Length: 419
Image (cartoon, rainbow, N blue to C red; front, side):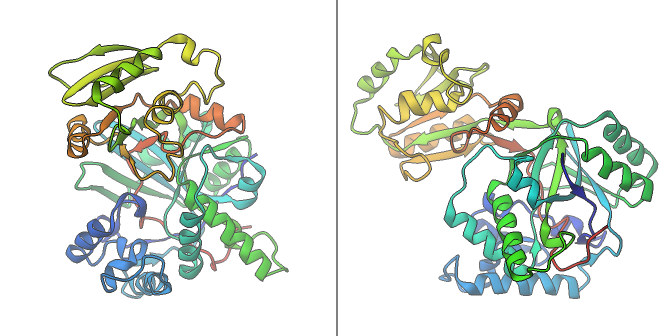
């Protein structure tokens, strides 16, 4: 059963939250971060992408980057931009995008739950990315970005959230430039804190929706601290990592599309013809093709959009992972025809989140004479079933929107822990 603790958040002063809140470090490029940072000295990207404050030729993984991140974090606290809560609390985090709202509880998950599989993952991680975040967490002595988790909420938790929102004012309420509204409440009532802890104690599994690298890195920092403190009790803050847990059925997964920069030496006509062994093809002249059901893919190549529908015998005998559209595409097109053997490392393939328009995919393909694939989104039900079975999805199978903001909650590893 899940351990989910209240904690003393380091968080923005009420009048600073909108300026501090920043997109996750891994969805902002170096140049984008620099531009944002120059315009906004309070942006949390000064912590998460601290290279923006160093010479332009600084290596992203140089020790000076992590030292600058720590310095910037400390300065934000010294200046009163970030303020430390004195009492362990839970926090309600509500995000609204295009009229749809998702509301979760912010707290700290146990590294032991991650190790034992109570916190379930569905993707592999890359060592280089893990090492980057391990150093960032270790040097900053804090979890600076929340792990995006999901679970099956109990009715008691749903009612508690609803009741608290009705009877308390939010401490933050702002709409960001991308038109996503963020609202936060502090749950500081003793009985409510006990109820939340007890209710999560009856939940058998938490699922990582987004943030696999941050989760793995936070856990490894915790294990490193245990080695450094062999007399640890298990209550120290390094035994926990910052998380936001949402009801799984409130979440929105968008497609994670693919663009391959060339046709692997094939002529366009030969490439299209090769697909007919595994897909029913339909030319869609004049407009982009967005798939509307599972096992269908939109494809753009050579100025034309096509609708691809996988023949049933392509996937019907596969396991849950093999039946995913991203698996069908990889196994029947990307690998055998386009030569993309390992999509995690092949530089010919580009992954494009579902927040981008299909016309943008089209432009990317036209730029290099390649091909674009518009996918149908993976479902939360498939994600949880795969995680329950201990299996892994292909890379870049899910794109969650809206993205959680970093900087609204920081979990410092040296602060005292709740009993």
